[in-house]
Image 1 (spheres, helix red, strand yellow):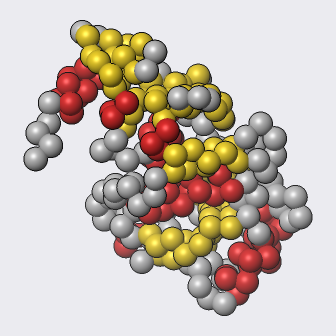
Image 2 (cartoon, rainbow, N blue to C red):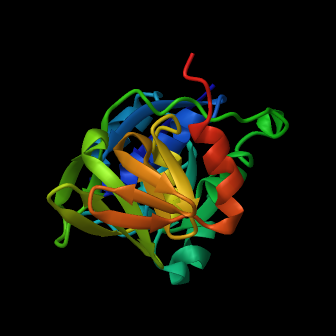
Amino acid sequence: MIRCLALDDELYAAEILATYIRKVPFLELAGVTTSPLEALGKIQDGQIDLIFLDIQMPDINGVQFARLVGNKCKIILTTAYPEYALEGYEHDVVDYLLKPISFDRFLRAVQKVSPAVQQMPVQATPSDEKDFFFIKGETKNKFVKVSYNDILYIEGLKNYISVHTKDQRHVTYLTLREIESQLPASRFIRVHKSYIVSLDKIRMIDGNLIYIDHNTIPIGDSYRDHFYSKIKEDPE
């Protein structure tokens, strides 16, 4: 097992990485933190094999942190700014992930860590361990807790998503693919290139339309067969 630490000054970004780490059989989540000092302490104590390291942090940036770490653990850099890639590679990092990070790209990066794990099968583990997630708010270091039970549906808006609940709508910088990987498949399903719905909030289905509360959600042609096979599954 490769012991992993996710370090990002934005907790939500670190939690996305933690979710991805939990999905991979040969990775072990050893910590999630927004504190470079806490991360450095874990690494110096020999608790970490691989760190996912954000470059843009207020007190010490990722490149400076990489210099301090040296060869004590392997490093995968994360950032929203591609211009930092070259400087990162000068510090012998394993890979460079550009935000927003998809699970597919994450997986390709971690398979570079050890040749011994490159052929190991990867299976998603259940996401039902918790019943909520955090999304980034409109200001730095503001995060909103959203319960799975409150979600009616999620709408994709290019690189943003809109999470619709009974009483509120939360917009955050994320893609539908990324949020889909964090949701429990037993409770949520993609029904359109722009929509994910909560199965237990569906009030009625009529042809290619799903009715949730007072909202109407279309069923995309490429998602129709999977959706209907899902709702027809015998719960027993």
